[in-house]
Image (cartoon, rainbow, N blue to C red; front, side):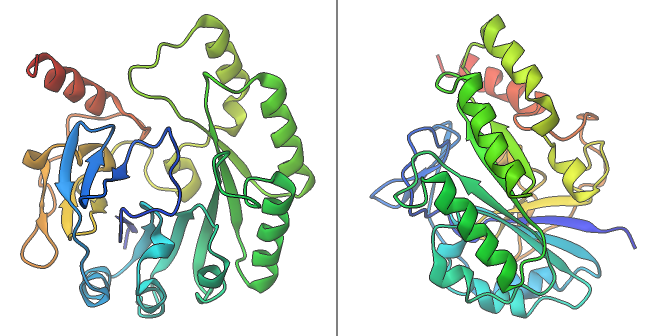
Length: 282
């Protein structure tokens, strides 16, 4: 049976406060989603709800993200309770060693460790970060990759080449994430740099073998920390696109979305929706 991809956001909380992050939990417990285009209260469901939901599928790749998923109390329990036919992956800033080495690495398809320039020391030191990833490999995480948040308005090509060389020396697969605010204006020079980096831009569908054509809402789902199911990460700013809640009732889309493009973020569907929201909020 075809594998279903489930993107789980167990928490939006994060131990980092990166200035460029599109998602932020305010002190009043409200989540600013995609630079404040949408907001919602922070509520987290129990490990029991996650386990029942994941194991309702016969064959799934469960990817934990956030926020920082390592902050979710019960992540280890959820991983240990997954069906034997499931695999799991995670995207994490990987700055919480006590949690990293308290999770069973069995059936972890990929641990993607995000290197952030604004991480607290010593994790903002590239040499320390890479050594830590090597320790994880020795512990039992068979496939470790890293992604670096590339800020086009800040990093030079010299910076980028330096970090690429460090990961290549350590034989750790690297994926540059060209982070940009959706209003960011790309200059011709920055576009040329991005093109030269293209070998390291690995879209999610390429990494996981999922269909290159958007199958959001049918074989790909995103579940928020309160249990709300969306067709895609890009749809979370629109309540009208929710598919239900795993604690109550939800159902996949019967028809494909109009988006028939390879999965990238932000996708054309999201960009067009944002333009619509902005034009109607003036």
